[in-house]
Length: 302
Image 1: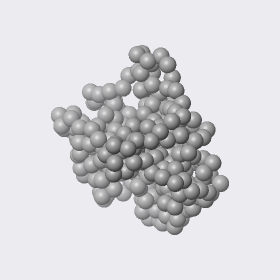
Image 2: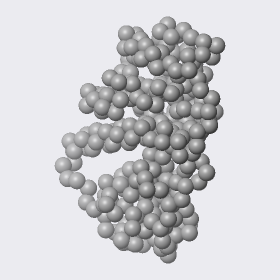
Image 3: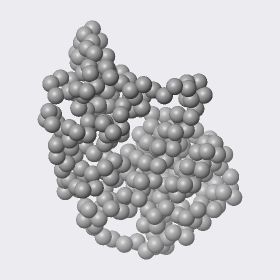
Image 4: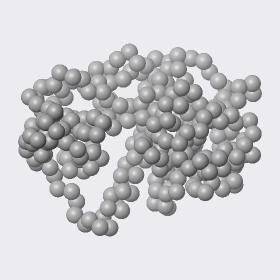
């Protein structure tokens, strides 16, 4: 399997600067076992942090900026794939290349095939020394001289594009795997939503309106709720975006962020800031909507 393009800029061959890594694994015994195996397979590797959930993985990776990430797929709070997407979205590539990603998974053969197709390295649980040695060998062969540079915002975003494409593929494969499991008990595809029972903010569910989907401009995740915004009102629903998306027409509603889905025809302007990040304004809404790197490909013209 050919190495991911983003890995090729993540290593350094400066012998005075050890390669650093972060481990995200929610089972302490497995995290300790992986660290012990890494110590044997790659003694010079410096583990800068070990965390047990996806949110902590993102926080520590942004703070410590390791060169290699070992992310467990199944973690509480935020999966390894979601954490990788969130980290990629928050990473300022002008300050350095994105880390090499190695996923640790207990997935079946179907999912492993998806990992291979998307050219992201992976390790199967329980991690075997021989397989880990191959991963380490691959990472070490990717060592390149460390280059200090400050690419422009457009160059930095272009360098992140291959990673975003791979993550989209993996997240899509994860969704397909979940859908396949669901079809074992539910043979019918979700019906398209036409009306949404939604409550008014502050009403504690005492006041519910049947909101026509044709009126909705934006669905936005907010804590335990999803905000449903029309041109003249705001409502709340408890249905998570992940459950809502299969019931929406993807030709009408575009996901532009892990927590935001917009009506495509309502998009007024797309703006790029100095860091290269995109945001939208919608007809009928004042507040801008952030576009994550994961979905920036929808607006290549900008």
